[in-house]
Length: 241
Image 1 (tube, rainbow, N blue to C red):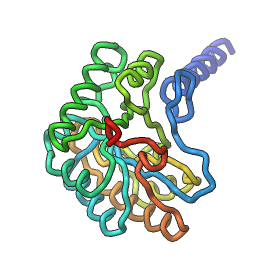
Image 2 (image 1 turned 90 degrees about the vertical axis):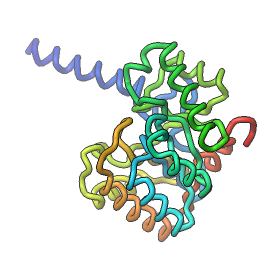
Image 3 (image 1 turned 180 degrees about the horizontal axis):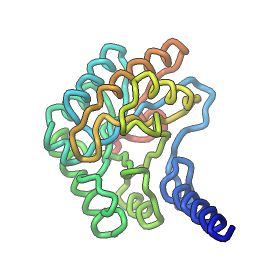
C-alpha cells in the first residue's frame, strides 16, 4: 500500500509540474495564449521545428494552392540549413516566429543561455528575411516567470497552442494525426504541427498528409485558416511590421 501511495503521489506531482510549466493551458506565470475566444470560425495552424526539407516545402506548396496562411516557428540551425525555404515562406505571406537556435530543453533552465538562444535566433531570421519576429514559442511550450518577463522586455509575444497529436513525433498515419487535430479545433484554436524534429532533419511525410486532410476538412466546415498575428491581433514582426 505504501509503495502504491508513493507512486500515486509521484504521478500527481509530475502531472502538476507538467501542467504548470509545459501545458498549453497554464497561464500561471503570465499570458501565454493557446486560443482566443471568438464566435468566428477561424483557426491558426502553426508549424514548429523547421524548416525541414522536403516536407516544409510540400506543406508550403499545399497551403499556397489552398490560399491558406499559417505561422512557422523556426529553429535557427534549421534556417541556416535551408535559408531559401524560410525566405519562400515569408514571401508567401506566412508569419515567421522564433523557436530558438538549437531547440535544447536544458538551455531554457538557465537565464543567460535561453536569452542568448532567443536573441541569436532573432538575428538569424533578420539576416534572411529582413525582419525580426514579434512572435515566440519556446521548445515544448516551456515557460517560467523569468522567461515570460524576458520575452516582454524583448517585445516578444509568446504563443502556445494544442498539439495536433500527442504522438506526432513518432509519425502515426496522417489520417490518425488529422483526426486528433480536428477533434481539438474550436473557433479561435491554435493547432501545432511539426514540420521538423527539434533541430534535426526527419521524416514528416505523415504530417504533410495530415495537414492536407485537416485543411481540406476545415475549409469544408467553413473555417478560415489565419496566421497567428491575425488571430491575436498583434504584429508579426517588431517595429509594428
